[in-house]
Length: 139
Image (cartoon, rainbow, N blue to C red; front, side, top):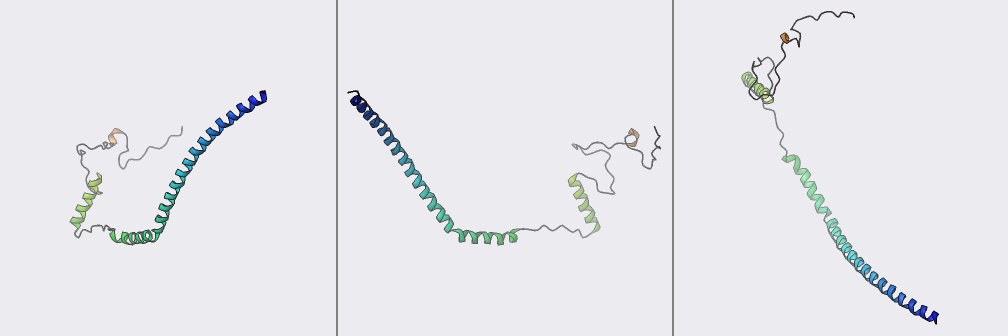
């Protein structure tokens, strides 16, 4: 009799496990179907994209060919007179905040300038122009 009770309880266990396994299989089948249709849609999109390759290549070639035509090459301005050339040089140096060579530097920097004042020979920071350094004394 105990064998009959064990068989009946074993059958109930198989029925319970079987119903859970069936439910899990149904959920897995639904996920697999969803993935299958998603992949089919993606493959169709990639095939259409690959079919347009010749059109894209022609468009790219056209853009590459038209690109040099759109570029503008800047030519430097050539002053015709020495006065115009000096004026252009002074404007160039003024745009970067420097003094042209041969010009006298202003004694006072412009307002708002962040430039440091130049060191003077009297301050002992730089030797005077034309001064000779004293000979080194062996120590």
